[in-house]
Structures are given as structure tokens and as C-alpha cells.
Image (cartoon, rainbow, N blue to C red; front, side, top):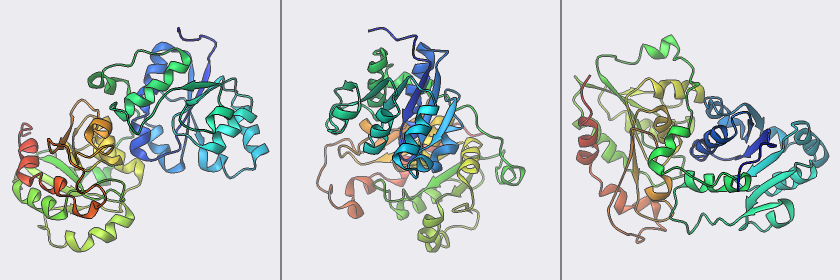
Length: 342
């Protein structure tokens, strides 16, 4: 099946979290490669707008939160006004699928394993994420079969299609925090409960293993995480800089882009760092579907660290994940220290 030149405007629907959106960007790059004149319109949540704005492959943004506040008639009319030829439901949403059909979008693509797609889309793609061995970004790209793009690049090459190039310059006040004579490291200990987390004890051990004369360390986190981390941060050496809850998402993207290393669990900031091209070190459990085979960062300088074994013993007990904490601070420090000093 060849790509259709009649597709001039295509909606990518992923009203989902930051990491999920970042792993959807390569499919936008593949569309631009095969259909360079096609306009790519991203339907996403409000809080991911700053992520989407950094991608060179996306031409327009639709705010899913605003859209879904409208009644069906109003929302369908707004979708119709976009004049899209195609919509790909990367993250299945029953109401959006219904609205796209009501809006008369000619080609509507979705997976077979959502029952509501059988009545709302007209191009079904056999795809089961739960039991697949493919990476999330590859699974997303599989949906492009619906427009005739069937050749998905190898995972080692897929990062080239992210297109995370439209990053704003860092504000002078934040730029002053960066030490250009040291390697700047961000530690992002929490994950908003979206992933298994390396313990705060391990992060503290890691800090103590990084020489202060060569490394400047920042602790990042959301407003909510600032509260959770406050007491722990007080126990750290005064040279460690607390930036939890202090930056907007756009500022945080620019800040990450100005640093050298980020360490985190499987969470949004890890994938931001990966897309920026800095050393992104992800710490993962060897438990499907949370394992790195499905969710590891895919940037040029990104890597995932996980126990090399199959383990489900703590699958239902995330607070006591032995596999995560069996990864030592020395192991992560060794990876960071292997990066040439500035």
C-alpha cells in the first residue's frame, strides 16, 4: 500500500501524558518524510502543549480539554472546521472517536482492540499494546499503516524523527544557575506515581558519589512533588540546587536542554531529556509492561538501566520494588562519570 497524496491535513489524537506524547512525535516525523506537504495537527491535552510546540513536524495544535468541554454538536463543528482528511486515534478516546465520525473526517484510523472503534473508525489496524514486545514509539508508528506507511525504522534510528528542535532559549535568571565549568546533572526522583521509583536513599548515595568540583546537581519535581521531597532535600549537601515546583513546563524543557545529564524513572522529564539529546539515564523494573523494552528513552544519548532478569514478585507492591533498588548508586554514578569531564 502506498501513501495517499490526497491526505493534506492529518490529526494525530493523543490526549495523554508528557512521556506518551513524546513517544508519539516520531510518527509525526515519518509522516513529514513520506508526505512533506501534509499538515500535521496534534490533538493533545493543555499541559502537553509546550511539548508539542517544540516539535518541528507539527503544524497546528488542538486543545483536547477545550474541545471536550463543548457539547457534541459544537465539538464536531470545531473538528469539521479544521478540514482534516484523516485522524489517527493513537490514544483511544471514545468521545473523540465519535466526534471525528460526526465531523465527517473522511479517513479515521484506530486499533481493533477498542470495541467503540468498530463503529466509529473506517480503517482498523490490528494492534495490541498489552502483549506486544515492541516499544511504545514503534507501536504508535504501526498505526501509520492506515495511510500506507508500513516501514518503521529500527528503534535505534527512530529518535531521528522526533524533531524536538523548537526549544526556547533559557531565561537569563535560569541560565545563571548553569555552571559552564561543570557537568550539570538533574535528578528527578519522583514520577507522579506513574512509574516504579528508585529510592531517595539511592539518589542521596548517588549525589555523594559525584565530586562537587566537577558536577553541579539539581533536584527537580512538580509542585506536588516539592512537598513530598522537602524534608529529604534538607538532608542533602547545600551545594545541591532545589528547583522543584519553580519552573513552568516550557522553562523546564529549556533548562533540561541546557544541562548535561538527567536521571529519572520512566517519567516525562526522562523523555524530554532524551528528545533534547542530553545523557538521559532511565531506571526501570524488569516487569512487563513497565520494562525498558516498552518504555525506554529513545534519544541518541539515552539509555535504560534495569535488572537483567524476569521478575514479577513485586508486581503488585510498587512501594517495595526490590528490582529497582538492587540497582546501586555506584552503577549509575559509573555511567555518569564515564561521560568526559568538561
